[in-house]
Image 1 (cartoon, chains in turn brown, green):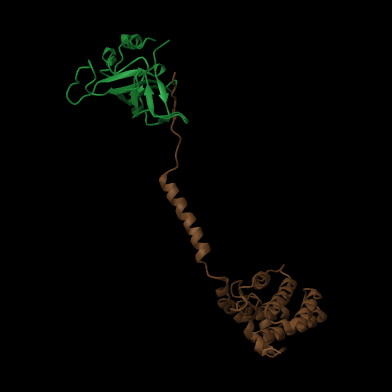
Image 2 (cartoon, rainbow over the protein chains, first blue to last red; image 1 turned 45 degrees about the vertical axis):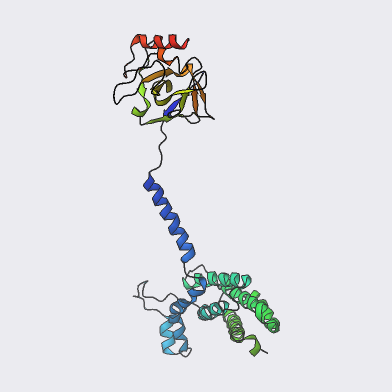
Length: 209
Length: 128
């Protein structure tokens, strides 16, 4: 004996809802596939750091430099430069950031997973400094710079192992603050070493002794 | 007990076959000899109990003893679901108590009105 039952139709989703869902999925997929390659981003970075870089051409202690360091009280948030209260080490680190990124994005280096990871770490650390995050410590950026240079050295400059390791050791000894004269001197010396090694690494291996 | 109010399945757009139950519309109806004599064209259902009670079967033309239908019409019968077997794999309905040569004795379904005696006539023809 056969038995057949019927039931109220289940509410099926509107076809337009499915179309909208498909569009959203495609948009998300397109965003991930078509977004600019991280290697293209440094092109915009110099524009954001150009402002703090310019005042460094002023002689230290000159009236102009002091005027720059003391923002006008009436300045709104939008008009005050993000690095107006920044420490010298912070400014210097952000100055070096575009060069470090360009180095990591060099054709012979950018495909290395370690370099890419260290570049991302460095970008993450310095972006907090660029955002003028009051809780952002200098230390992650300083250490990340050394790690990035170490990764570049290990990838392409075996003869600079001593310098890169020394820089890493020096970074590990930094406090991350830039308040006292001692800390400022340590940071200044460290960043000078970073700039020096960065300059060396910017040359092809065959030109580096 | 009041008799159920029968509705054609096609008149219930908010209903569908229950999950797992086949829809026999379009299936051939075969007699005890395995020969097809009609096709299921509609289901008569009781929306209250949510059950199919009858299969509305359109008979083939030229069956022995079955008078030719009026122009633009087909001869139809109702088969109580209780009297049939569904072959879901072969998509066929089997009525072992009927055959092509005996279908002429089965009461035709001439309208969507079921007279009181119609059901008993069907049952008598099916021997149930």
